Length: 339
Image (cartoon, rainbow, N blue to C red; front, top):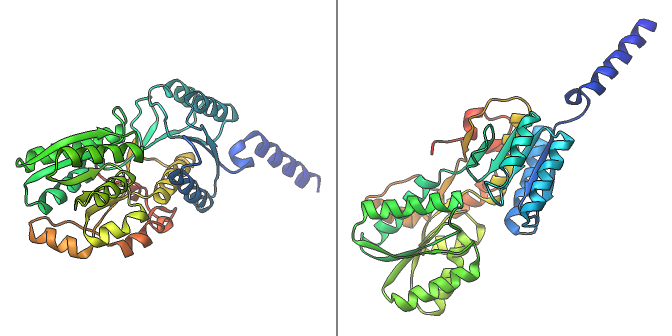
């Protein structure tokens, strides 16, 4: 009896001395904010991922403040969480805090942004190739001629800059008779997208299409175009459910589904795998889908552009099918795709 008691006491002491044996893994998430609907959806699905992977996720909002975000990261380091996810407000300003986490042996994942901070992991999207396809879909829909414009996020943001480059490079290389009359940074602000679209439609009455690096910008542009009696076509990115009517009508020739729910689940899944010692590449690229109506896809095929697509009915399913796509049962290789 005494031997059993001594062994039990020894095991308890070992568990208390070893956090990984005493408690579940904890993931700290330093979000930009938790009010925007995109971030709310991210957290909702991220919490599902935490449950699926048997970890705990703690989300903290920086409320748009860089100083607060740095403080959140440093607090996570002091708590010695199992992994830290950061949606960087400023990719360079967070590097010192990331290095503190790395020195403490904590894996760091920078979400949606390429941050050069040493040993951190970056969860990215195949943005260049995806926006190249958006450019091709618009170009083929216009028979390779006409005036178009592009709404982007902000200069210096990795995602926005990469999407812009993929689109512009492809139009210039493959569609020499299409003219890009404007590329407007909006800071992801729908009001600024509205103003840009109104200016373009007034200045360029023959404008045929607007591409957007985020769906909300296309919605703003379409609101203006519709009020001014212009029949534009669009190509976008995000796979927001609000785009269904534009896609089904054929006005939006292609959209790219990343999806807030899928983004949230994927990031937490990556962090959980790293916290559990799984080996993953430093740069991961999220699996995405091209979304188009079946009728539009057939028209593009007839014009010489063939691509794998899902329609909006399938999109509604896949946008929330994250556990099957990215859950603990899938292999490490399925957590990332080529650029």
